[in-house]
Length: 162
Image (tube, rainbow, N blue to C red; front, side):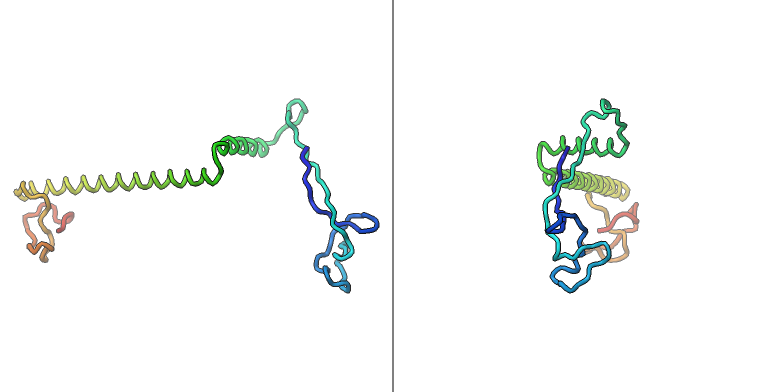
């Protein structure tokens, strides 16, 4: 059993518990709604609600529903995972791992692009007959940044530029 404390509002003289109309607080002339008590005529006192838990449902002959089983499994997993650190540390670790994965994927994509460009450069230099050149010639009919004009001998005009 777990006792949970809460505040209840009762008549100061009789001790009878009432629901309170909080819109009447501080205004003695205000009339509370039906079924409610004026806020200035009650006292606040502690009360307790018992929450019962069964530690052995099989022995008690109780059938546990799916929602309880799912929540109990989640709570047990959560307790196990947070024993090594706080929930905030777990979130930080997850965020760090996601960032590391994204950076690794970006580095892999950059390396693939670099290899593709190297292969295209070699292919272009071979097709042009200029095996010693490491970068392709310009393919556009405008001056290059290096001041050269484009060459009609470029084998792959749609994929290379200066």
